[in-house]
Length: 146
Image 1: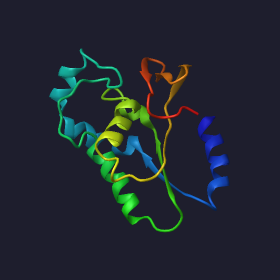
Image 2: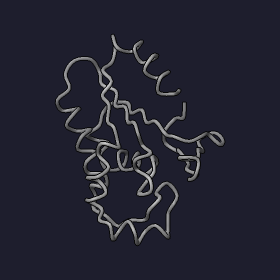
Image 3: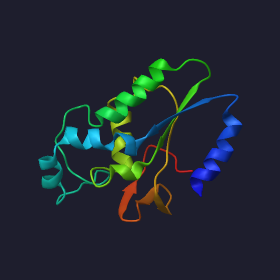
Image 4: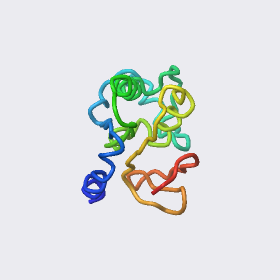
């Protein structure tokens, strides 16, 4: 229902902004392979807030997702871009939306100079606190929940 409404309402922005979509489930396999099955299995028992799995991985935490965003932005011409990240449920159980956004803010903020809209499946518990996939409580301290 939310996605149908987004698609209907986002047409309003079409004359002012270019919406650039990044679909997480399409990139999931590459991300999982880059982390390694051993790391994922070993870390499932000790999750951190905002990060469903505690992994010690290189600075390019979400290499496929971030690389896709960078490529799409570098090829973009025209109206100001807005990145739209969908299907974040595909990140589970490796990570949650908070961890993805943390990687973008901390590591790649100099490369991504546009608004980023992230759709998070779940429900809002209180201001800035949501239940990712109705199973994992996360806190969105830098973004605005709409």
